[in-house]
Amino acid sequence: MQRIEPADAGALLGLMRKLPLWADFADEDLDLLLRVGAVRLARYASGEAIVEEGNYEKTFFVLLRGQVAVVRAGKHVADLDAAGTIFGEMSFVLGKGRTATVTAQTPCDCLVVDMGYVDFLQSPEREDFLIRIFRRLAEVVRQRLGSANARKAVILTAIRERREALAAHIAVERAALAGLRQELAGLDTADDEEVLRQLLDRRF
Image (cartoon, rainbow, N blue to C red; front, top):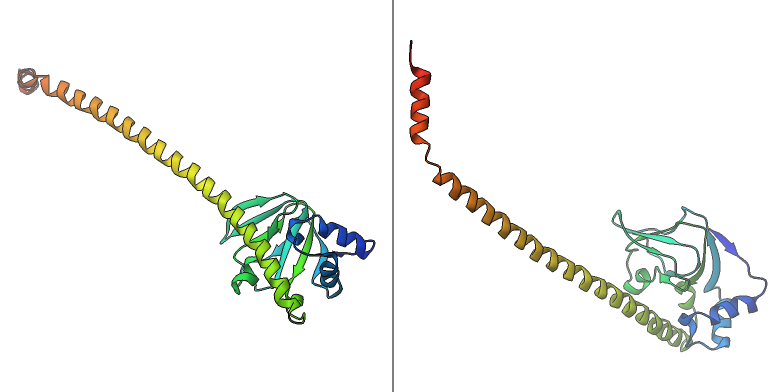
């Protein structure tokens, strides 16, 4: 990870202003977050782990450039490449270890938000900042669930259609088998089989 130093604080402030995450924050609020070190820019090389499953950290990330892969319990679950995508927030929200590993698939630039620094703010600013950040993260999770539920609906529909197609195929094959059994039962070959045995057993 390489920390990126913007040309000036105003450049980073302008970048933050474009992100929906900070829509509820005034410029002086964002400036305070910058001054206490709660927000910084970082660059990750291709193949570098940005977060690792099981680690507990109070940071989350906003993807600005590049593509990352999400792996949970050794299983690839998603690729993320949309600028503004937020990831890594579950650890500090749930108060437990990371639920997935996120690795840069290409060189990536991220906005790193360290909630540990927010904890050091004085009341009532601390509580106010947390409420506004959590409100925005809740919207992110709602959208994520909406996308996941829509995908679930597509998958369940596909499963039902394939079950119906399989049932129809099985019905056709069962009918074919029944026809073959019926035909086999109608073939009376007992006399021919007896004649064949007699011929084979006869001694000359």
